[in-house]
Image (cartoon, rainbow, N blue to C red):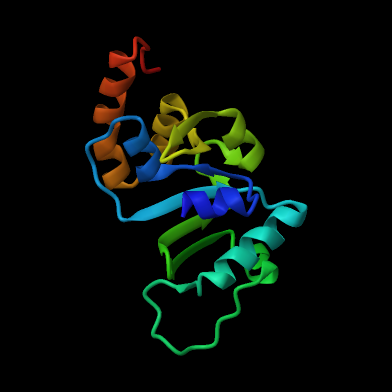
Length: 156
């Protein structure tokens, strides 16, 4: 999915569980979580790609009317979708950080599977997980802080 997003020229930052995994977390996640640039043609590119992947709301009965287009993305700042490629969570902002531009500033570039893309930095990921207040996010913070210390940085 990351390769497809990159090939389509979509501006995004990987966040949540997949970003934690990229930094060495042992937790496994089944979906890709991204913050996307909600400005201009990026929304059109993302919507077109998702429509081609037959995106449909996750945990919604099949067969209900759903149109995957730029209007849908603009109307729903958070979408959890299932696609032919797998499950994807879309957000136009990162909790505790802000919109795409702030997320991009708080990200680092990595390369995996021959594809270069951006993921939230460990510090930004910790800040984001703290801000959600969800137990599953709070539970992961000690592991992320330990990874940060292994890299020679101190959690704030």
